[in-house]
Structures are given as structure tokens and as C-alpha cells.
Image (cartoon, rainbow over all chains, first blue to last red; front, top):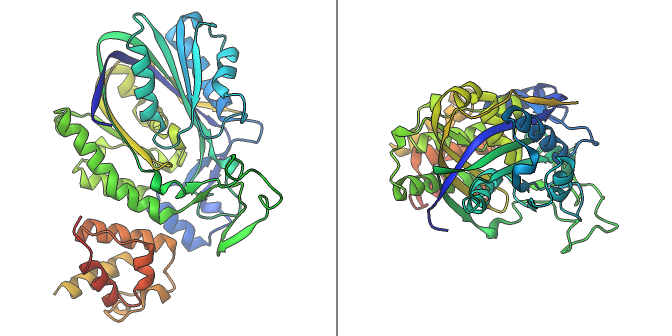
Length: 351
Length: 78
């Protein structure tokens, strides 16, 4: 899609929730001591938040939303749009957004639906929800974004276990004259199987072989109902696509790079993020990272970074932000927007 | 000249290996330190310092550092 802007929508608040349980990659049994140290230094992820099996992405998003609604003093009946972006829904059928509409006590006049996206999901979600909200004078909307990726990876796969972490987030948006968000969104389905859970959909339904473990290389054991990640392909994809995507947005929307206060990148891998940062010639202090403490939280990683690294700035200042998400699909996109003293509660821990 | 530069950059990637062990004829994938993480580090180095993209197959096709450089040289500039 060409670069486009959505008028008259502003973010009013952002909240994020993570499971209380933390895993330490320096204790990860899938790697030896040297591998662990190299991993933490290179990939940049030390700690991961791991949800117990009875906590879903919808639960984490619900906790974040309830806190945000309270802190914003919103009336639940005023919310007319709820979008839930996840790849780990509560059920195959029905969508989780309907369940969340009920659990949150939102009005029956609220539209609610799921969108299946991962690492690009926050940026895509902002584009979808703002496009709907800009026609609703006085409207209020909730974008819920999160995954429990640890529930769909093999505990014996060192190509995924040390990376993924669980989180849910809630972003509150309002119709607001003068607000503006600008997007540049892209897709390349040729890489559909670079990150994939092969079995369990309707192309390859769960069958008697789905749960048979297979060793692909040393330390990479998983079954076909678990997530495969081709790390090198994704790494090259990010090096190739992310900086040009952002540069096109800046050029076509005539945005001066130096006017941006913070650039928030999907928290995938420190080496990857540093390569992208250097390509964009950005100072480190303008590109905050949360992955050391929170890992790769899929679509939630941008709101998690907002809460973990920029909470005080978001609450007390007017900021110009550039957001960029990239990954599974393959799907990627960037967004430029302004915020003004938004509500940003501290990180919520869910037991 | 470029070969020396490339060998030097490869030596910088291998932290746990003595720099003197990294020569044009070093079979880098047989070094004890080599692994999936080192592949990421080498790919990132080639991307940032030489503005070229190599993938997993390129790394597998090269036995020595000199062979890897030849592959890199034959790649289009990004």
C-alpha cells in the first residue's frame, strides 16, 4: 500500500501486562554456558516472561485494558470499536474479541473482531482502528495486541525458546480533530513458511503425526503443532526491508528524521535492531530497547517498550514517535504519530 | 587488500578464537566457536561493512574465508 495518513485520531493511553513468572536465559538448559553468554550479548535477550498454561493472550490484554479504562476514567459504554490482534487466540472458533467485549462489559453497539498478525500487528492494528475511528465523531476505541508465544513453541527448541516471551497490551484511541497518523505497510507472502506452525489449520489439520517430535539439528526438536522459525531468513529479511520501509515513509510524508523523538522497533534481536538503527543513522538514545528484560513479545513488543522505557516521557511530554513492526507473514510496516501527555500506567504483572 | 580487510573483519567476529587462527585458508565453519549465532554475526558484519547480503546457503557453500569473500564479491551491492 502507498504511504497514507489517517486524520482526526489520537492515542490517549497505552498499557501493557506480562506474566509474573520470569525465565533467565543464563539458566537456559538448551545452551551451554558459552552459548548462553553469546546469546545474551548478541541477541540481547536475558529475561523472558512466561505465562502459565491457564493464562492466555486475551487474559493479559484484558488486565491491561481494565487498568487503562480505570486510569483514563472512560465509561465502558462509550467504546464503539475493539480490535484484538493475536496469533494465539483463546479458541479457533469463536474470535476472542467477542469474548473480550463481554468480559470488559462493553456495549452491544461495539464492533469487535480479531486480526491474525504477529510482529507487524501493532502498526497494522493502529492503521485499521484509526481508519474506522476517524468516521466516528466523539468515538472511542480499544486496540488490544498480544500473544502467548511460549505456548506454541517446543520446550526443546533452542532456535525459539530463548527468544519468545508473553505479553498483552491495550491502546486507547479517540476521535480528535487535528490528530494524524501516517503509515507505510507491506507484505511478502513468499516467506509464509519462514515462521510457521505447520499443523492445526485447515491446510494441514492436526493428525496422528502432528505431535511426533523431530530433531532438525542439534538442540532443535519440535513437532508439527509447534512454531518453526528460520532465524537466518528472518534476519536477512529485516536487514533488507525495515530501513527502506521507514525511509520511504519519511520521504513521502516529508518527515524530518531529526524531528522524531523516539523510534520504537519491534523487539526481535539486538544485532538485527542495531543493524537497522545504524542503517537509519539514529542515535542510540532515540531507539529504546526493552528486549533485555522482556524478550520478543510478538505484536506486543512496541507497546511493551513504550511502557517499560518511555512511560514518564509519554505521560509528561508531547512526543513524535516512529513505530516499526516486522516479521511473520512476512508482514511489515511503519507508522509516524504524535502523542501528548497520554495515560501510561506502570507495567502490570499477572499472576 | 580487500582479502586482508575481510580476514580482519572475520577475526573481529570470532571473539573466542585467536586472531592468528583466522587466515584466508581457515575453514571457518569447522572452528569450535562456529554456530547459528556466529552465522548471524557474520551476516550482519557483511551487511554493514560490505553492503552485501549473504544467506545460509552462501555460508554453507564456502569452506574457507577466502571462498566466502569470493561469494561476497560476486553479490550485487545492496
